[in-house]
Amino acid sequence: MESSSHPYAELSPVTVLEAVESLGYETDARMFPLNSYENRVYQVGINGKPSIIVKFYRPERWSTEQILEEHRYTQELVDLEIPVVPPIDFAQGGTLQQFNNFRFSVFEQFLGRPPELDNLDNLLVMGRFVGRIHAVGALHEFKHRIEFTAQRFSMQSRLFLLENDFLSRDMRPAYETVSQDLVDKIQQRLADHGEVKKLRIHGDCHPGNVLWKSGTPNFVDFDDTMTGPAIQDLWMMLSGDRNQRQAQLLELVEGYNEFYNFRASELELVEVMRTMRLMNYAAWLARRWEDPAFPTSFPWFNTDRYWAEHIQELREQLFLLDEPALCLV
Image (cartoon, rainbow, N blue to C red):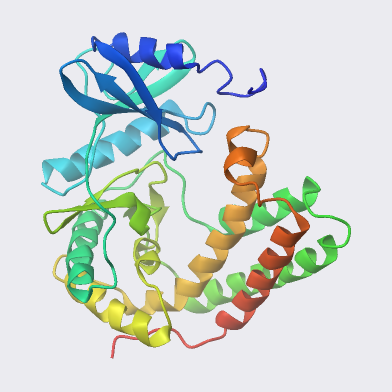
């Protein structure tokens, strides 16, 4: 049972259904939790109609202004016929609703399958749509959403883990050393690269946030949309060995360039982005460890084995940061 101090402690199944019914829906009492941990997301059955998806935002993570700015961005994309799944806009309350102490949004259920990115034709299509998203993202700036920075995603992540004693006495010195080496190298790589052009991006554009249907990628979960470099929305589409990633990159960029100009210099930042994501992911799990959903869903975290493997992974990143970047030839 969730601790009463936990932000979702009062979000019972009855509360979820009552929140949905407060909008005029007639539920059939069927409710299935989806694999979302940062927020609470449910598929809720509706009498005589398709099910809906209901997302309860984690209290105190985003301000109301930040959430609404996310919603406006997704609607801006929809208005230009870019396939994203936006929240439903209700006559009363708009896209962000309130029930008891919870803010929530409702989405139409969208059925699709994960993209097959080992198919180069699919990567060409994916590049086109990410390019379209970025062409829109470059038109305006966010006023409230966060910015992708080394300070936030590497330095703060490192400090949180060290200041909250997640590592054992045996593991701490190795993590402290390798993480500081990585922070120093990240800062050096960013300084060597020079100014990075930033725009409105999806922020968490990995294959799990793309639903493929009828030959088209449909982008979901803009919860991490932010101001950042374009490459952040592209590098997670690449996988395999260097030769495979090189071939994938060429297809992805070919499609991307049809709608927005790809900056080849940002390829120097791919391993920087990957390193920051690894560091931030460990800190994210640690920050949420008091949420009962996390120990249940990530039982391998916060063990000596996990930290040993994480430290080894970070050591490997030290070498990868010195490897030549992928190129467009």
